[in-house]
Image 1: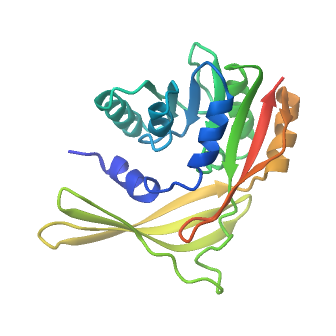
Image 2: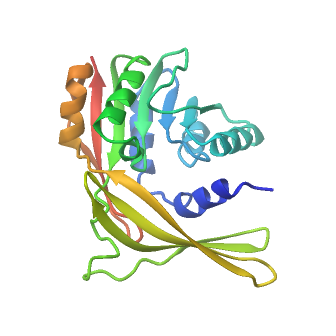
Length: 244
């Protein structure tokens, strides 16, 4: 049976494609060597890049997501290594050509100290001149609390006859960040309906802030990039850092 964390990850993140062209571009420019996908989940990006001939290491702090990534990569015979580890303290035992941090993962690390710990860990794996790129978002941009926008449609997927629906219901400000509120609802084949709340906190962060934090750690900021907003997802500012 598929783990609930895997299903909800696929429901809420699996259909997102607006950022793929950027990660493909950076991967193509990275040259030889593996690409590290931080917060890889079930492989939305890692598997996509592997299908294009790149060797990928997918790192995730959720053991069930990492295991599912490994299973999917093996089933498709793709060059992806799944690693279960905390992004703030990991050791792959090898260098990588590029580090990517999609989907606001950098804003889930517990503020400046967590980001610094990650940047130090990543630096140990990057050769001079290699890049690290991380997507950052302002959750209030086009949020469900914005009176000028309609409430976003829920993310929905059916698995083994059960319908899973994730409804964005609000965004609230907290010191140093914001909390995204969702209702997760399931309806099984017998018609039994269940619902529970889910919250994700995103730390406040911008490309300029992360660049300033990264400079003392041996990074040099390049021009930031942008992932456009869609009807269902906010856009992202992408900080791009060069090692050394």
